[in-house]
Length: 486
Image (cartoon, rainbow, N blue to C red; front, side, top):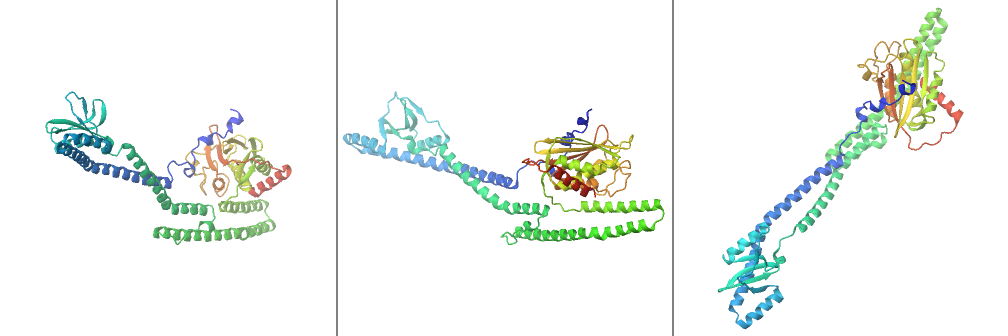
């Protein structure tokens, strides 16, 4: 296996991401409310239309049959009481002015009975009941379509031809237009209602995100909302934000005083130790204990830093080189770097230097190869779409699978193989917290060939501007690395 294969950051792509960083499937609250309201309104419209059509069926059939029967009876009465000369004029007037033709019915006429919709059959039954059993209704006679009604005048048979559209029911296209119009209005109303319902929740979500980022001034909600429940929630949230702002301010004041209140006595103890303790071995051990206390204070301060980080494009190569420069005097660690030139990430330069320095220090303390006593560390980085995958891997003994998920917990101490040195148990917890603060993901895993691998996933900047200043830039990065490891 080559060195590039051993240090490839591919396992980070397959490692499960933290639950809060995984993409979640599902609709937003607005679309879910809109979808449910739309289903309710559209279902109501369809039910209303079906109910209207069912209630309209019988009255429309009765009305149509009554109109046809009245027209037949009036025409029959006019023809019966008119003399033969006036009868011809009457038939011509009905055809010209009313669109009703009266024709004699011959035995050889071929007609097609009406067997259409349920409405047509109901009209035929009602018309037969009104005009008598000898009444006929046809949709075409001798190939001519229309609404044909057969009736008798004395002993003679006649046909009455009428325009079918005069008695046709509302067509399916009309119902479809009404349904689409009602549905469109219902959807528009559902969108307005959903927006009004979800607006306070959206404002609350935005305010919560601002509080999470430490911006307490931009998280104030309206305490004069019309809805009483929303008003109470907004008041409670504002009071909570005020308390958190006060706690954050108190913490900043406390952290500002820790450095002076604790380090001044430590410096005085160290001076007194150097001047008062005669035994060189005891003096050396006491100085080491004082240095350890000073380092633990640094860890506490690092872990208690504010969660807000100012991100900007940073050249990863320069930060790694600066961190390596800070440990080049240590003879028990050797670092191999494999990454493209001028690779940039979106991060805070000082925070990123602190992350890499902590990982290198962790590998130097706990990841030494048992045969040589030297910690061999491989640092590799690859670009994947909008992300940069960084891997820092040692060749030590690794950790037990049970302890692996707990390594990023504050004050957790692993097995004795990796915790021989003294410390506060905050190094990897600081790394995890810092990476999340920069919008990335941090994960740990044991490698198949032995050792512990730290995987970091950071964002790539959208634009890759050139980084000016070669020597000055390197000097600044080295200064940042020394600050991170101080």
